Image 1: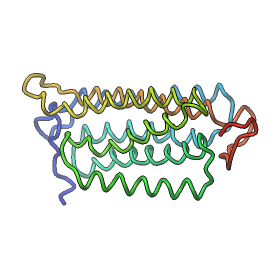
Image 2: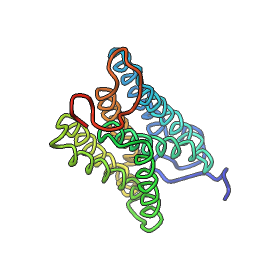
Image 3: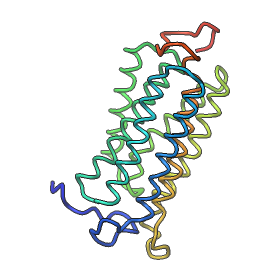
Length: 230
């Protein structure tokens, strides 16, 4: 594979110039805003939530990586876009299993590996939707977590449900991009960036609110919490 090959996958980009995708590039600032906002919430809460802090850092790296890809626009730069997104998906999956469902470390790790394998299988087996199929397992996981938490933790269920609806909308805009080039030259990929940044913010704030309280350390739950909730 030629890692320097230019990627012309979006309506905005017509050539290999650095600033050929201004909206797709600038809209990545939304990820930095989400990360900064979540960090401010974490600081106000006062807990030493290292798991949430790590995911905040990953969210910022999504913004920087995607900006690099939508300016440099090479197959090599694409890795800077997709790898941070994958790290957030699987990192949050582990955190959700531990923090919301009380799974132990090994059970959470094994379940996440199985989820990752299933996700790769889906991506390898199906094509279409402008590459959005790769994100459908993550959407399915969000919907499943929200449904499973509906009775035991309604607040978290509502938060994850809202994130799932926003993610579904963002996938629609991501999928439509190339099909609308003829009628809307700017495309809709930049809307995917902004809505997806909102998704990550919703997920981060929910994790922070369910994280360690002020002055506590950052151990993940091994089972039920002291107040009887998972």
